[in-house]
Amino acid sequence: MKPDYLIQGDSARLIPVGSESNKEARVLSVSLAMMTQIPSLSKNLLASCNYRLGARAKLHAWTEVTLGSKDNKDRPDALLKIVNGKNTWTALIEAKIGKATLSEEQVARYIAIAKEHNIDAVITISNQMVARADHHPINIPKNQLRKVELFHWPWAWILSEAEILRAEDSVDDSEQAYMLDEFIRFLDHQSTGVEGFTQMNKGWKAVVKDAVSQIKLKRTDQDIEETVGAWLQEQRDLALLMSKHIGKNVHLKMDRKVKDDPVARLKHRIADFCDTNTLFTILQIPDAASDLLIQANLPTRSITASMKLKAPQDKKSTSARVNWLLRMLKNTDEDARIIVKASWPSVIDDTSCALAELREDPDKIQCSNPKHAPTAFEVVLLQDSAVRFSGSRTFIEDVEEVARTFYDLVGQNLRAWQPAPPKPISRPKAVEAEPEQELEEAILEE
Image 1 (tube, rainbow, N blue to C red):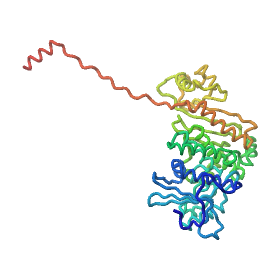
Image 2: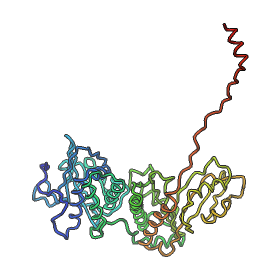
Image 3: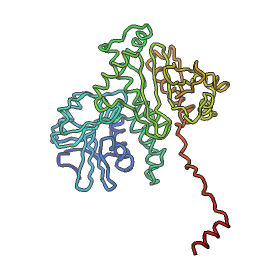
């Protein structure tokens, strides 16, 4: 069962016996033991590595391993081996916990070790956030990854995947379901050191001050790069937060041109940020009426969450189209932060109105030309954060609060308009012949 090159290593224990001071080893041991016992959990986690776990596959995990020789000073945190029929897939695992971060030198060293022993992949785990498992927080040259794949799992993502499995009742076996509940309780406890993204970079306050003062943001500024990098981590954490909130996987929507290139995506977002002074993320929520757009506008120090819907084309007047929207929001609490924007045909500027005012008068959002009806609606929750916006922690707290609140008040209630199915074409009924005429025709035929 053990690979020949594995000189030392203990099977991952559900109840670790190692030093209590080595927190990351204990948390990793529990996590890997859970993967060996809950197939649906390991299947979901390994799918991020483009590995399909078969129903009969056997998963083995060893912790604190030594490869090659006992004199080898390198000791990766774990080795994962999957036997799927005649095929075998292996991965080295390096984990960090709490505030500890991965280093380029260590990751590169483990990639070299993996190549030496024909190990398929290296998986790192830490509290550092990434958009996808193949988008690593450490920039490793592609020529070093020709024979070894590199993946990264944030601890918060592992916890989120476990919570989604529970929410969807995906684990039928009662013993596995119990273990999954305990695993979630374990990872969710503050003593484990598992945490999401909690604060912006040190230069965040200075960047906000420059934007408010209308000082041109420079793409080459180190604070700008760190700000955008921090936001990219926050948007991943935001997707995980919303996944846990609704019990379904929420995904980030990324530009196709830079989707598979984290370095190019960072440069692209830095350029966009310097041009607009706005940070944004788009979340794709299963079966939602539209994507959820979260924006942070630095000059106004405001945070918004919004969804945009096409107005119903089978209704002709503005009031009829507005009432269609209001019916979906009839149970929405009166929150003064909720605003409705309307788009119009041609070059007419958008109009906006508070939701509470729109309830009293659906025509209040009408544009200057009363003959036109809106073509689309955007429902927005606007949070003016003022002083809290500049705080590295309070800013993150407000962004996450706005996202959750908007979905609770608005997002879950919206439904995209769809045209009604076509009705059958009415045809004229055939003229029935008079009885006398039918009798006469019958006689002639005889």
